[in-house]
Length: 433
Image (cartoon, rainbow, N blue to C red; front, side, top):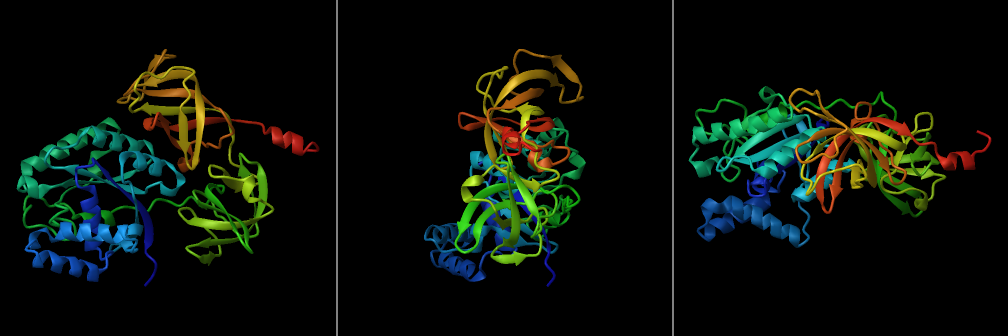
């Protein structure tokens, strides 16, 4: 079988809207969960007279297996549809979701947003829509879940679709490109097979909607950028940084430079899942052995790139941000933590240049004294320590960030331009240059 194309999928939604049940149901319907285990729990459920609840039983049983340390595929959350091979980026809680979405491991290619037909989108759903779109998730599928609980009422479905559509319009997404699939994660309606319970619905099933997604372009023509997630020392091998190639191609026998550490090393070998690779392209999560670099020279948050086009270390940068949930207002001098690719660096607001009208994209106020929830603003920022950030136009995964303060995401945004720092190390270590 030829290897199917790979996509990263994030499944998000309000905590009570059935996200984990839906994830479990997708894994079950695509055969990602071992059928023997499924049979085992199904039988137990029937013996205890809980046959109708077998799915919940399966989910609980698998959870127990996980807690006992039995590795099952659910832990890795990989599944295959007719067309693609998906990795589900796990987003257990809202905070983890934000953190996972922003670190380099998980620039999701697509999202399923789960919304309950009982109560429609909640405040958190709204935030997820904002975040997913600001962080560059271009493709979205909406699962209107718990249709069984509203007796498959078309009006309930229509209400949820209308409310969700309003949210998408607010962030400038084209609603006509978004499938809204009425599902029951619990009973499996419209997941794999069209359900007789929704004769009024004639769109795709959830799995069919996943197959309609497009694989994002791999920007192999751009300069190499590999944000580092971890650095290991492996006996007999040496220093092995691990990260996801975001743009360009990583090849053995080439020299890379890590910024802002400003150290160079020669790439000796590359491997993914313990297999050696001749090269790594965008989307590949790899470990690569570099010669001439000690484990202590580089760390998470550094970015590897080519010598002739090194990653940009910002002295200051200009960014457009959406204020999501800031307990107070943001003013010049505010210094929250920016989470961008795998880096987390405190950055100070140096100037609030202007606010933007979200509907028209035109300037609203020039140099306002402060910005608050719901505002979209263009600001100038100064990192408190060396920090790699690129423009979102040139390197989207390295140009998007979340701003966190006091344990929550207060804003999200993207970098418009970078004023590069002149490395002091450069001048000192290389006086002849």
